[in-house]
Image (tube, rainbow, N blue to C red; front, side, top):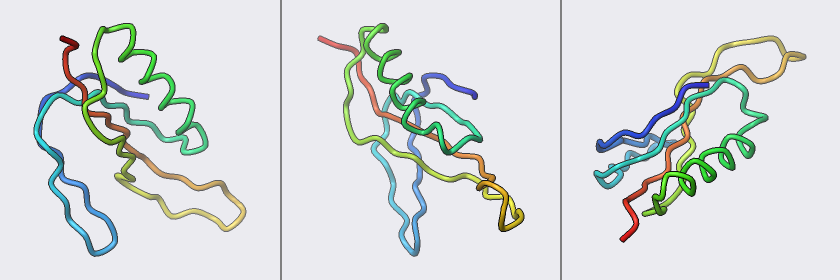
Amino acid sequence: MLGGIHGYTATFVGPGVVENLPAGMHICLCADDFSKEAEYGNFLLNVIEKSGLVIAGDYVCEVVEEFPGFDAAPRSLFFNIQIPVQKST
């Protein structure tokens, strides 16, 4: 699991759709265990609260890379979670 707070404009690519996300500060986390997405999302919410930040937009979870595997194997992928944040006023 990798994470951090970054300021940039991210581009989300969905099935046939490209959307530019608003520029700003995002708290991000990259991981490879998709079954823990909710756990990681809650972890980021705790970091936001402890850092005195507030959520400034929609949660985005984006698959960065999916690795081929066997039918019986669990899904193998690398994904990024990002939540736009801002300093509380």
